[in-house]
Length: 247
Length: 327
Image 1 (cartoon, one colour):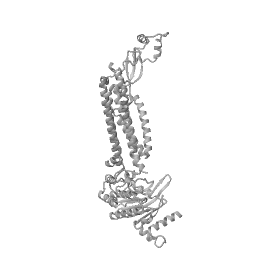
Image 2 (tube, rainbow over the protein chains, first blue to last red):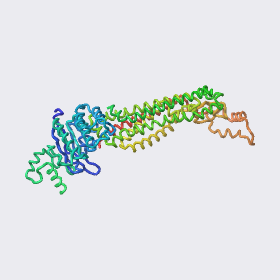
Image 3 (cartoon, chains in turn green, orange):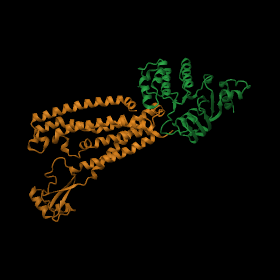
Image 4 (spheres, rainbow over the protein chains, first blue to last red):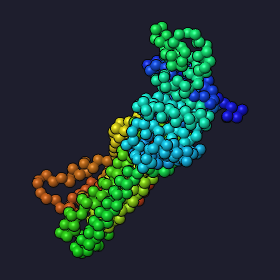
């Protein structure tokens, strides 16, 4: 089987236990290719832990995980994956141009023209030091760095959390446009459910370290049709989270 | 990849380059000044042989008063710089990435962690090693120019001469650097890494420099001057032991018993000749001293350096493990 045919992420009974307890347990899921997947759940539900295990930064305590057919390890992340965290770590002393140079040096499949066009569209000056940029500009540079390596799976852990509403809208729109046109699978975690509306076509809902709901958004909505307060993705997710808290 | 590390280490490289220019200028100027002072005082021959009659006067003493401490300070610089490399280049190399969270950026690019690590390790180390080597050569040329009027009169085992010479500075630098890198990758905190590196470096260096002399087999030098075991000894000798041999060439175990018979009852001066004759009658045929042979210095350098190099290899392996381990 060629690598292309492997789904981006397959997890079987995946679990991670820290000294304080299980962060993720019995997680079995499959992220289908070409989808924009919403990864939602309350704080501490295990979203970041799941993403960490996909990158190979975190080692699973139990179960199995495969990314495009390969098991993530400590030697390095799968080259077809790009990852952007809420902290958006970039070297503050580098200029924007140097940050792109960094991406070029560290990624064989780097597309310099594409990365530059993303930065230009965001109107971020190339000569500016990353440390002096605003939150929105930093996010756009980090996104250019993530997309410039031409990934097939893009993971975004709370990418919009520190942005103002206007910047959130622009960043999200850019993101969706780019990923849809290039058929990149996106795994996007966010607390703001309304934002994911109309953007995501697949949902993974985690609560308390377990998968509560996973599947195609339109199918999930169809299955819950007729139930009040479950007509939309955000409402559906919220209803499940409330039920969990009440239980 | 090389470019990335070069860009990250740029402030360090600029500091090293500037430091080297300043140090080289200072050492070359001081050395030139010292050489002209030697000629003015007409004591150039003392550089080769400090025991000459002409080297005992006021001139050489005044010369040493103005130059000895400066040269000694330059040697200490060569001893201190390896530690600084470990503290300020080795320790923060990975600790800072972990502290600032930028390791996530590095770990999520296409290049493997091992390659990232190896590039960082080498690109940051080479300029530091070059710095130490050039500084060592500059200081060495200054020390040689002062010769027997400078620290070289203390012999090859004099601590500052030994530590600032041969393969030692490079071995200490490799040790300090890899120690810093390992501790930094292990604890992921710059301050912790710097503190631990300093502590471990000082303790290990101290321990091995006291230990290394015990690896040398002392050489026995015989003398007919019974009353002065140090008679006719050249400069820089390290005497480990003195004693007496009997007529058959065996070491006299009870020297005090033999010498006690020669102590006069009254408080009178006994000439050296009379005392020598008396000791010889009582079985002390010849005196000897055990000294560290100069020619073994290179072997000791290599032995000590190989221990530090071995530790450095362990630290490199430890760093690979520490960087590649998953949370």
